Length: 455
Image (tube, rainbow, N blue to C red):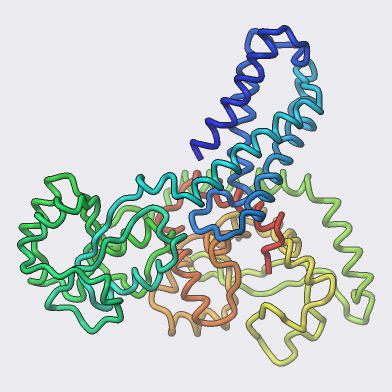
């Protein structure tokens, strides 16, 4: 992110400096503060990069796909400045052709640096070197969940040091590190320049080399619990590894102070008004299309109301554009499937671009939902999921949202196992909830809309 910002800023500063030096009259006003524009453009470019998923640490895309994302980001930056900024500050307009060339140069340089970095691992030296204490069931989750290179962009896994208390594991033999004695851990860490030690034993009591770990910690090596490591590297909480004391002593899971609750509501209402003013034409067009497709039938409806579980388990009626047939649930509540034959033709497009969720702005106005939070589930499914999945009920500690961390990282769910995976991301959000994280999720949601990743 910082590299992209510096590239965009450098190109801008050089270009604007050249224009000033040679007295080129394509920035007619504000010449005394000409440097403000390149800084603003570079900063906006970072935001639009974020919105198209370029800073997703688990992004798996071809070089063509990444270049496409860079182009979309550049186009968004160009459009925002040409339509919004330059219309407000009319005397600071840059000639469109020159501005387009400037943006294209930034896009090309940013993509080239990314291509070289990914192809030749230019920045591999920045990876932290990690060793795991434990080689049993808990430790094997790291290998299973982070088996791809894209999952290990931030670290190099040196190996696993087994303990006598480990249960049977499925680790690859080449990843096992055999020490003559656990007392040699400090020496091993120094010789192999280890930056971080992950504690992942199946049984903690009496199994850890505490004195060696103390020496490592005093020597500047980071010592981290496996839960914290997985949370940091994957953006999710490993529900199957949680133990009560970790929840009690860990940071996060903020209290519901009335000032925060009031501020959240005001923020969400203001945002809902803004989104409504931007999308009301889409709302009207969608209503017309649904009506023309099959809303004219007897008993046909444009909107769809459904009972969902909200904060603290309170029930409320969610409002959506109807994307399924009128008789979609004649046989009772069913999980929505990725290729669901109950979805109408218009409904497929509505779901793909999340347009069917727009009527939930009224749920936001009523205070039943926020823009960001776990997606609200149906009470029929919640009863089943609470029995099947540990800690599932804790996702109701916050208001449900139109979008959420789970929707960005695990966009589709149609079973108990999918709900477990999404819960890991929901708990991460609840634990780290903040205005900045909410803004990040909102910006990243633009990627889902632009590239049609909705269900």
